[in-house]
Image 1: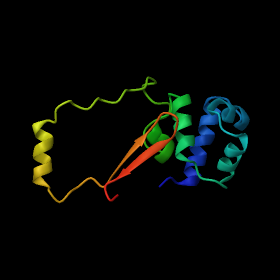
Image 2: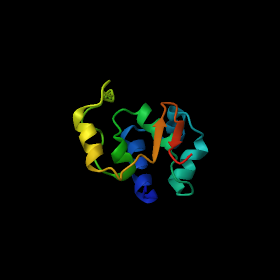
Image 3: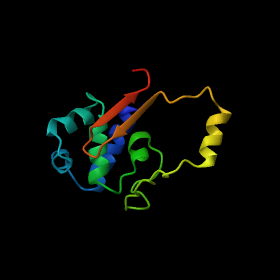
Length: 125
């Protein structure tokens, strides 16, 4: 879980680094100005959509640094790394792991889209 006071400090650090006030920052990531005010005052906690907008608009921001304070800012590589595509054929190594621990099953899969929306698929349904 994100520590709100630490997140506020990191958000303030971003504003200083980019030399932006809260209004300009809100405009840049396309959120309401009151959202930034409520986050900075501690009234609201950051939403997933907010965090994704920050990371998308500021490539130097490391997601793990923003959420947990782990990692570096600005990130050492400013280019975004594309995810590794799934292999077309499952590897033998993956099949072996599944057999070694048969009591583990997939409970839920969550897909996050670039617009901040997501879909969750539950095995229980």
